[in-house]
Amino acid sequence: MNARQGFEGELSVLKSLVLEMGTKAAYALNESVEALVTQDIDRALKVIDNDYKINRMDIEINEKAIWLIAKQQPVASDLRRLVTSIKIATDLERVGDLAVNIAKSTIRIGQKELFKPLKDIPLMAEKAAGMLTQVMAAFNEEDVNNALKTAELDNEIDELYGRLVKELLEYIARNPEVTSQVTQLSFICRDLERVGDHTTNISESVVFMVKGQQYDLNA
Image 1 (cartoon, one colour):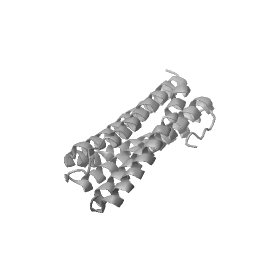
Image 2 (cartoon, rainbow, N blue to C red):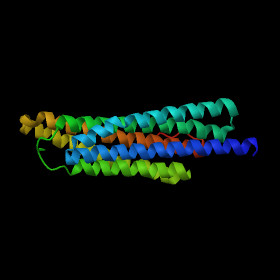
Image 3 (spheres, rainbow, N blue to C red):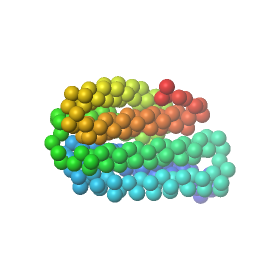
Image 4 (cartoon, rainbow, N blue to C red):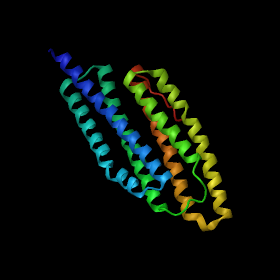
């Protein structure tokens, strides 16, 4: 095996690590929302306890990418892959943190009866998780079109966020006794909106990796 083949093998390992981290982040997000819907405190605690695995992968990806940059002095296209791996890992680590935030809000809400059945928040979470799955597929396949389509979906999450927060604040005004619970639900909406933003960042990273051009898709 020549040096180029060895380097390509290392790039493949790095890519697999990023994809695995994406899977863990998506799982944490889904689990945190399921814990909220079912008011399962133990499930929420597991999301918090398992966050170290995502953090550890972020460190591993960063160290491996930096080591390859230092050792191989890669050409432009390979360098973009390495830099993109670091950037995507950073966004995935933040998604993991946001899942933890949702889990903590779930614990604060506890098992008190919810002021109304949750419908829109799970829908928002489903859209955010779908975006994350789609953008990681775009990264895997180096598919710019799919990355751009994923970023467009963030508009739906932003619209839902704006409407939900407005409704929740109006509900507090009419029913101040549920202020604490509704405030936590508002925080969860904000966290899900930020998942959409980080997923859009990943879309930008995929475009940069493939085309070598910077795009601001959060605008």
